[in-house]
Length: 351
Image 1 (tube, helix red, strand yellow):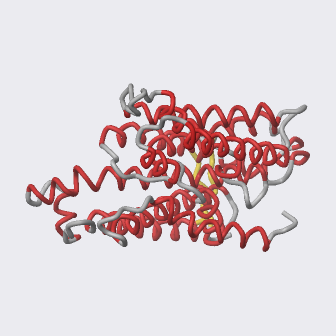
Image 2 (cartoon, rainbow, N blue to C red):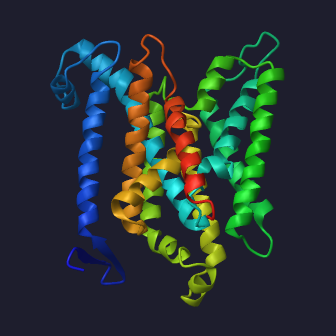
Image 3 (cartoon, helix red, strand yellow):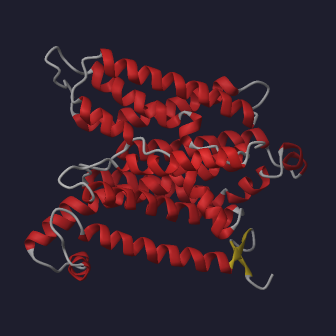
């Protein structure tokens, strides 16, 4: 126990048991994230030396480099990082709540709900000339509303004298399949404006990110991450099962609802600005669990850091590997995540 340290706050009313070894790994991951952040700002159509990027971040550099880094690259990097954090933490919450290693926002149907809402938005607000009749800036709002609505819908459908994890998963899979079918039908039959843009958004892309989007996303995600961190003890209790959690004075159904609400809000925020980037919520918690164990006090920050890394790396590959073409970040996360999902399925058939 010598690598654990107790932190007490609010006159001992709030305490945390910190795993020093785990937090050393988290610090290393943070430094790796910073390195990828700087590298991502350096590469693109025009290469900028990483040292020049550091100068720009501290107010130096020439006008051209400042324009490229600050106006074009930094917004998409921030969106990628915070969307990755949100998806990873949402996946960790769902896996802990449902007690199933395959649980993720993609499986529960939240991501599919956001995608269907965006395609419906493009279909409904297109005129006879296939031109959009409202501002494209409302697109993230549609994605947010769709993801949140499906989260609530899944909860309502899964309720029967309380929520059980298996019912939540099965209802989520059914709703997800229905939303994907609706999305396909709308894209085939509807008068959709910019179908390519709709496809990129459904796949998951941070292309075209702007500072006003960054300013909206970051406070939302930071607030939700802080709330999640303070709820980690409830996630740990959920791991013991309903009977044990109840015997410890834990309100199982109330906490399950709050945790589902929290994960839905995280996914909705990410989807609103980065699209439905798949499998981050599945992979990041598993990688984090291998590094620091299953205690949510260290699992949540580790998963958040890994999620940011995954999406930033996917975005860098997408905009540099096939230049001048740009491949959505979600293509690369899916290319890794889908085989990983199959691997988990065969490795844990009983779970």
